[in-house]
Length: 292
Ligand code: GUN
Picture (cartoon, protein in one colour):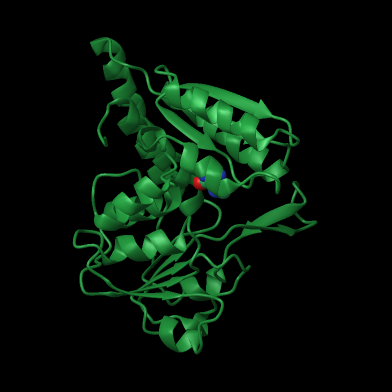
């Protein structure tokens, strides 16, 4: 069994990005600049945005964090997005989700200029990704594609089963794995919470991508011998034996599934660290005008 090490791979990607930033400095080019908008004080969102800003520093990017009160009006938020859209100093813009209930995610997402949409969430980028045109691809699916590439997982003609149909992970993943390029050319089955006879389907998967958001949902009896397993889930479980008081687990029951798999991503240290590396990579592309 091969452990697909997302932590190590993400560090490699960050080093590659830092090396490119050093070259840009020598060339006198534009230093990539990411702006993150955070509304309210949700703990998980603060942690994620904090990690994104810190990673920008690590690779030599500039970053701007715009913090807005939970009570900010939709109009005001749209104005902030508009200002960043028009600011030539800023290359990439992300608005951390979820947003408070009184704000329309659709309106805010739609306001982000496609050229700065390094999250790949706007209809323009989702549409272009679906067509196989140059686009920003959402960080998590992009990170998974990169892991499959760097670990040289064979995909052509294989059966890829995706569990979960979210706009951020499951749906784009199913599209990318069916594309006519490596890593792709799979026969894809997109499953979700209403799928009947799920384990009959997952048992035929050569590549199983799990993004259902349920702790240890996938067990050994649901998996084919020799499959490649990608676990997107992340859950905090209380554990008094740990100094932190908790441990992290995924959507896959790791030990028993790992015993059957040919390759598997751990939690933590698998898909998670790759998402930030992908966001940084998209921001580098934006600064260099490589997508639009
Ligand atoms: N919330 C959870 N994941 C993400 C992400 O990838 N980008 C943004 N902006 N918000 C998120």
